[in-house]
Length: 224
Image 1 (tube, helix red, strand yellow):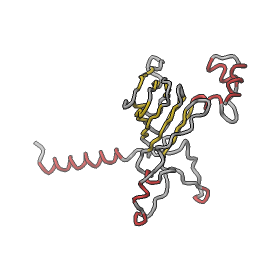
Image 2 (cartoon, rainbow, N blue to C red; image 1 turned 180 degrees about the vertical axis):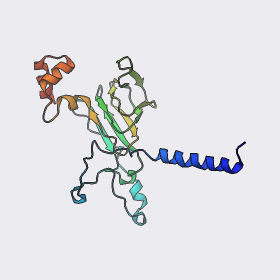
Image 3 (tube, helix red, strand yellow; image 1 turned 30 degrees about the horizontal axis):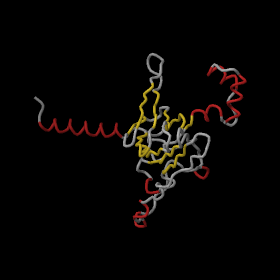
Image 4 (cartoon, rainbow, N blue to C red; image 1 turned 90 degrees about the vertical axis):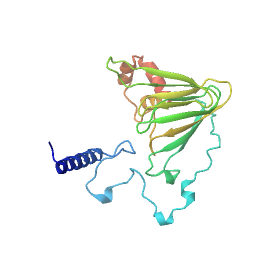
């Protein structure tokens, strides 16, 4: 039978190893890439923000106003996203959260997009939204589509990094409040990132990938 002293040593060892494993991972990145440099004077610090002296912090640093103002939905998609991240609201810095207000004109669309660094939780404040997200490639090489129609007060979650969208299917304006699990979740709009890159992706690549005629690909590129 193991002596009590040995039991304590084993317990302490497990705690130390668990703590090491828990802290042995890289921190979450807050931008798309960070190319290393050898000379510090050539560096640009962007992975987060520098911190204000705690003695100079006031309650105003933790207050943001203006999210009650509707965004302008007079555009080709009929939607507008008002993002509140650590850049606009410094009090969010290092807290790992951000939020947004999404306004929709009747039948407006927040098109398929991805947040590479954050999970999205969406609450409908007014209107009726048709929402959905698509899984990454499954074992059968297919992608499962999850979709719902949301009404006022409904909450839906979009897992981090998955393609998702929201569309107002009502005849009146809609608005939702979004919470994101990163102070800089990033956004990649699928259509823009495929057909609107600078310089453009090769027509040969896109026509083969989407099984489209080259003329149609060029037409799509001209729209973005």
